[in-house]
Image 1 (spheres, rainbow, N blue to C red):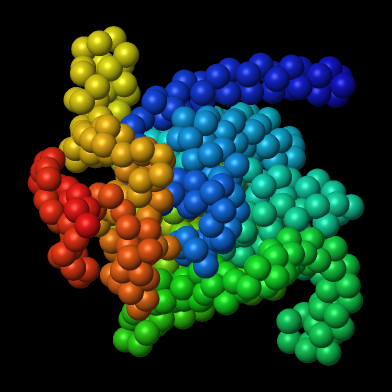
Image 2 (cartoon, helix red, strand yellow):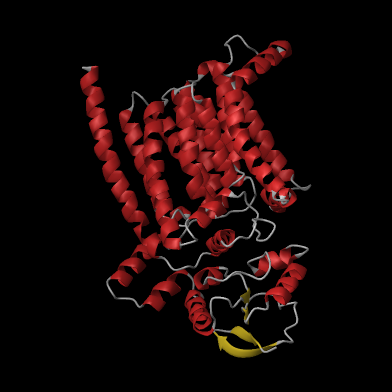
Length: 490
């Protein structure tokens, strides 16, 4: 009888994943045809194109994330359609991996596996949480879900799990919180029932012993990061790598976490996280492995989303897998339902209060349908995403008509996607105005870049601070949507 049920569930899972994957594909399909409009993607595109053209990441072209996202963009030549398609494939693979993980966690409750997977696919596929954008989070989820699956299913492949989490970390450093959640999960489930937190000698002995057992997971996590650091060391850019990937993010986090003292809010969040983790460890005998895994992952993912103190919508994507699993946990753990429901309600209220969502989700699909059915012009279609995008495409057309392959340009603005669309690179190592003005060497580095590369055109965008570099060798030759175009005359 059990074999018959197992085969039936496998068959249902197969067809469910086929249908869900197709549904996910349809939800993401419009993203493949979006214009180049999203500012962060524009920066990633410039960095990817710069890497392909021989510039050394961080030293010659700059952004403040670990290198793997930029290498993904470089590998696909910063082609937005291709990268969005790869992101779509990562999404489908994430849905399949999530289903496998949910099935492993909710073994006897197959229906919970199905509807939690459906919820994950829906929320990840819609632009509601900016899943349509090829941001770091879109590429992080697959290795993190696979790592979680490995650790839940078997203890034999901890090295592989560590490598997967490390890849996520090298896409964005917040992967460290998933590493911490998985590491603590392994500690908690391996702790003897007799071990008490107040027995410091036994706790120390246990930690030393278990650290040896966790060594493959640790070494798997450390090796790719170490290898990356060694690469930049030999390229003479180790300082730039450390500053961009790690140190810059300290100041970034501090900006949104001031409460009485700098980082005061972050300290408060850490205390709450520590208290919840300690509670799980003390009461571990009363909880199942499934409860411990999902609760720890949800707690650390929630901390991750709130870590920087900035309410960017796509930050919620890192919370999505554990969020959906936690909803399943409420249904699966009847004895703890009141407790888990209370935690969920509090968390959900905090999320709604602090984060926004993409409010034009329905109109997003209407816009796409209107465009493909010729009820909207391409200009109207592009303007839906940002009213300034048609102007950017006019600038691109002008640049392409009036430059050759060897001509350089400089854009004083925050629309780096214009570089990507024209196949040009910024003269210095900063691609956008807010980076140039935000870093101490920004103006000077850009000034030197302009002197050395002698761009044919300098384009100053409206709604940015005045350019602090003299334009004595340039004269204004055009104005497109209040974007002033200066041509080099000497």
